[in-house]
Image 1 (cartoon, rainbow, N blue to C red):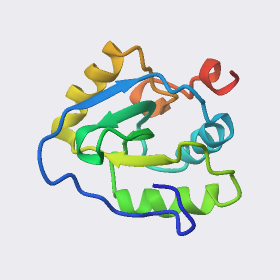
Image 2: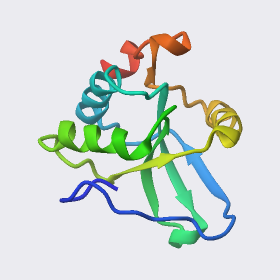
Image 3: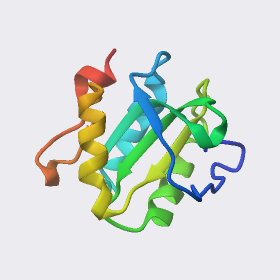
Image 4: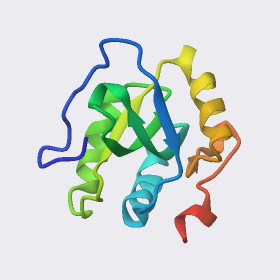
Length: 135
């Protein structure tokens, strides 16, 4: 979660149903900054979605899902440094890293909800989605 220290860890302890959809308030400045930063990292793909999960009591927050293809700690260190001057969106953004075995399932769920990556690295066959960045 983006906060004053940039990161707060939360590990889901049990299986939970999560609802996903398009964010209502799209954090353009944050997404644009992240897309630039990701070109210098191992991030292959990044999505932005509005999520609501039963574990948090149904509280909705905007969530970032990253296919980082590398060390999540290193990626977050670079991200935290880059976004320190970016205003915190409302709701705040959670960064969620998925293991290789679950990425396909998550991407399918996001695609069914109409959510496309805002960043898709050239090494994975894509580029930053300019149409999303310029909205």
